[in-house]
Length: 389
Image (cartoon, rainbow, N blue to C red; front, side, top):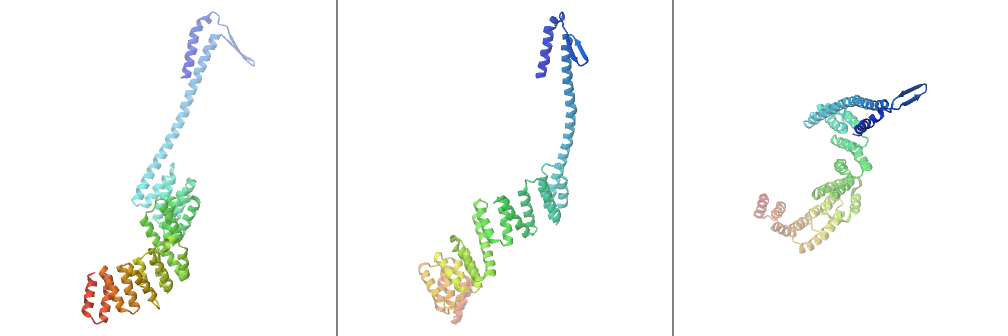
C-alpha cells in the first residue's frame, strides 16, 4: 500500500510540475570516477520512477522463486507427516487388535517425520514385549529417551510398567524407586509402586504408598483397608520367619498407636505368635485388644491358645460376659472350658451361644458333650441342628 502511494505521488508530482519544467528543464550531472552522466531533470525523474518499478518487479520475481522453493519443501514435509500419521494409525489399530508384529512395524515406520515419535516408540516397546522381544523393547525405550530428553518420566514409567508385566520384578522395583527420587510422589508413580511393592514383598514401603495414594484421593477407604491387611499380614510373616516371636513383639510396639489394637491387625499378629508357640505373649496382646473392643476375631484367636493354666483367662472373660452377652464371647468361653476339662461350664456357655446365634461348630461341640454323658438322643438333636446350618 505504501509503495503504491509513493508511485501515485511521483506521478502526480510529474503531472503538476512537468509542464512547468518543460521550458526550464535544467540538467542533472552524475560523476563517478572517469564516468559522467548528464541528463535533464525530467528524464532523470522518469528514469528514477522506472528504476523503482524495476526494483519492485525484481522483488516480486525473487519472492515467487523462493516462495516456490518453500512451498515445494513444505509439500514434501507435509507428505512425510501424512505418511507418518497413516503408519501410526495403522500401528495403533494393530496394537488394539493384538497383532503385535504389524503394530511394531507400522509404529516404527511412523516415527519418520513425526513430531510425536515419542508415543510411537513407547507403543512399539509394548508391542515388542508382547512378542517376547525384550532387547527390542529396551532399544525402543532408549530411542524414545533420545527423541525426547525431557520425557524421562513417561519413558521411566513405561519401562517399569512393562518390566512389572513381564515378571521382571527386581528391575521394576529399582525403576520405581529411581522415579520417586527424580520426580517425587507423582500419581502414576504411586500407582505403579503399589503394584510393584505387593509382588516384591516391600510391605513397609507399600503401607507408606497406600497412605500417599489415600491422601491424594486415589484410593478409597475399603480398598486401602484390604491392602493394609495384606501388607501387615505379609510383614508379620516375613518378620516371624526372620526374627521369631521377639521380632513380632518389637514390630507391634513400633506400630502407630491407632493401629496397635485394630482387630484386623492384632488377630493375624497373634496367629503368628501362636504358630511360634508364644502363647503367653499372644494371650497378653489379645486381652489388651479385647479390653478396647470385644471383637469376634480376637475371641476366635483366644480359642487357639494352649495354656498350662486357663483360670486367669477364664476369669477375665467371665467378668466380660456379665457385661456383654455376645454369642462369640460365650462360644469362646465354652471352647476354653473344654480345654480346661470343665464340661459343665462349657456346655452352659455353648448353650447360651447357640441361643443367641446358632452355629454349626457350637452344636457339634454340644453333641460331643452329650455323647460323653451317653445322652444319644440329645446328641442326635444337636447334630441335626448342625447339619441344618
